[in-house]
Image (spheres, rainbow, N blue to C red):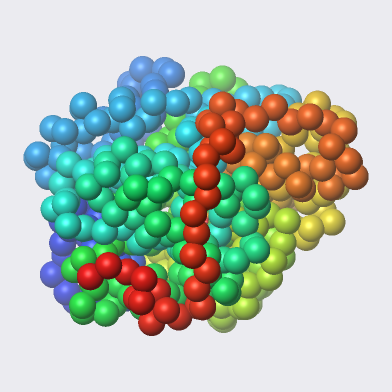
Amino acid sequence: MKYYSTRSSQQRGCSFSSALLAGLAPDGGLYVPQKIPHFSSEELAAWPCNLSLSDLAIKIFPAWIGEKTLEDELTTLAPQIFNFETPLSFLNHNTAILELFHGPTAAFKDIGARFLAAVLATTAAPEKRVLVATSGDTGGAVAAAFHHYPAIEVVILYPEAKVSPMQEMQLTTWGKNVQAFCVRGDFDDCQRMVKELLLEPAYAGDFLSANSINLGRLLPQTLYYAQASLSYQQQQGRTAGVIVPTGNLGNGVAALWAKAMGFPIGEVVLATNSNQAIAQYFASAGENWTPLPTITTLANAMDVGNPSNMERLLHLYREGGFKQLQTDVSTIVVNDQEILLTMKKSYEQWKQLFCPHTATALFAREVISQQRKHDDWIVVATAHPAKFKEIVEKVWHSSLLSLPLPSSLQSIIARPQAKKTIPATVSALKHYLSK
Ligand SMILES: *Cc1c(COP(=O)(O)O)cnc(C)c1O
């Protein structure tokens, strides 16, 4: 299997591990596989029920990796990486919640970060450093994952005053090999700084990106879509669509890659907050892709005006075109008022608290259920509500509900914070980076 940049089909492809080590392709594009591996429905029907993420990784990844050594390692690595559950919990007969918040930092980012860290630690030369821009959850997951591998240095950039207090603690309390920079700007500034630094020859060979521009983050996310879609089909006898709270579009592309691999997934609905660049592209019938300035919302991990993975989405539909894209994917924009309302309503209706990001997907389900004949949905729950205590309290105008913290979050509160605040420029960042 070879990997190519989204921006050019002319170059020679590279291997899976080179794509991981580079993060961003030399021409500034994102790595995509030459062809997405496919499993037929007969093949899938012959697989045992209730496969774990680790079992699925061992079945699916060899076709993506195509490198003997790494494939051999996978049998040992997979059970260590995917050591927590991603359960499907049914709200009613046609709606299930895919709970992706049972990992060490209580958001789905743990899955990609743990895979990337483990693979890099086995394949990378130790002098590699990891650079990551975060809108809230990625940085914490990457820090937690790489903290186990002290030889790899991690540099995190996050936007000042735009992450929750709990998220900031998850970014700034690691010490040792993890350095966090608070950037005077928004997430798109952080993401731009990462790309700029990676394209500087003096740093390109040294740093790699752990954002969802990195293939190693995206690929493991296909596993829970594979697992959930098979499980839904086995339990209900029908195929479900998935509703994905969307920001940088990594999770959405992972869902589409799982669908392209042959897993039983219907429509993919991208639920965004008021950052509506993707929705505007769809509204323009695919004529006009224009990144927009980032707007701050209650679903802060989705505050992205220029989603990086749009390149991968467009690349995936380069042959099918907008017509096919429109058949497979739709978008729904959810504003802050609707987020708060949905959080409140879900608690009243199901006695369940959801995080503001998950609330965008739940709201989208309400909207779309009224429009579709086919009405089976997997709603993706991307983070634990306790990470967003301040917003949960806003819903009830008090801390009426005491939110029990998962043990992973409890241990973080106890540690001291260390951060540096810098302007949103690469030169400011370089000033602090060790040579
Ligand atoms: C990162 C994140 C998202 C958005 O995922 P993308 O892959 O960037 O689209 C949604 N919800 C939560 C809780 C997140 O941390």
